[in-house]
Image (spheres, helix red, strand yellow):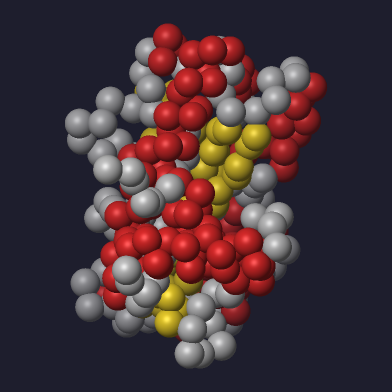
Length: 305
């Protein structure tokens, strides 16, 4: 019995679902739309089902198509992992490396390091991801990333990730100068703080339970996508909250925020560079090079100011 489902067909279906049209998917895959149409129609005929509802403006998966893609993505991930593993065994170098970077960190130090990385001639493609809070660990666990820069606190149990401690991250409580809390004497206690809206950056975890911090029970919460948006929300006075000390101090020096003492400060948090494999033998030359260089960066260099 010959298999009717191919990796190529799954890639096509996945891209159409992501892009919403055959034309956009064809452009992303550097192919002509007619080639994608043929691939999908051939698979539909072979399986005897419809994969896409073509009645609307967007190419929408049918229930059967959605189930095929849901399970098919596991096959795509496995095929990509196998391809990378085979190439790494043959050459000792990874085909692709994905690096997750905490939203607390500035991209520039990483881009500077990549300039030198590309000069090494590994031929490895690099993908940079932005993750928020526990999403830095989740990216490793779900194989979205090979390296995570800025993974906070304790790692998820039982995963055996390799880690390098970057340092201890200190948070301070910050508010806009015109916020009502600005007029209250320090230290601010929980009864003062809970009456005002707090802003939180949404944890980007997909599988791990989302983490939260610095939010009191019953407190009105504004959720934003990342730390930069959280900073802007606090400067605007729409909400309050904790920020990394370096980031808050930069805004305070410009008169945009006030750093206030609180009765129960947020504890310092260990912050790590983490990776999926503990043993060097399980890593290719490109990741080993990157980890060596990354370990020489300091927390202060990486933090967004």
